[in-house]
Image (cartoon, rainbow, N blue to C red):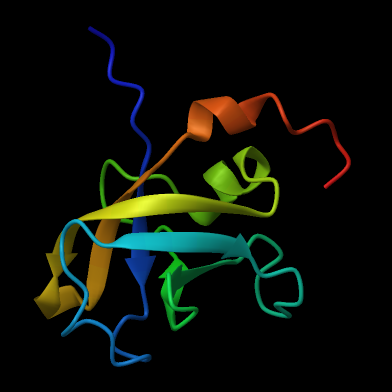
Length: 113
């Protein structure tokens, strides 16, 4: 059986003081940050109550091994997508999330983002 799961690293949890309350099983909304002046492929992670918790990692220095960077998933996301937290790494201030329904969204990208 082929595993088509896509995992991402969410970092900057310490910046938003979220690392202490984020836990495996939590659902997050990942939304493109089209106004980010530092990163054209920035994706923000929000709790379902709209609290910003961090960003999808987009640097070779911050992407955990075996996970996708924001740049690799940016075109798979129309505007937003959900993920489920699978691991929280307190020492690193990051979490690993699994994208939900990413296969259904692949066909939606027709160049009109």
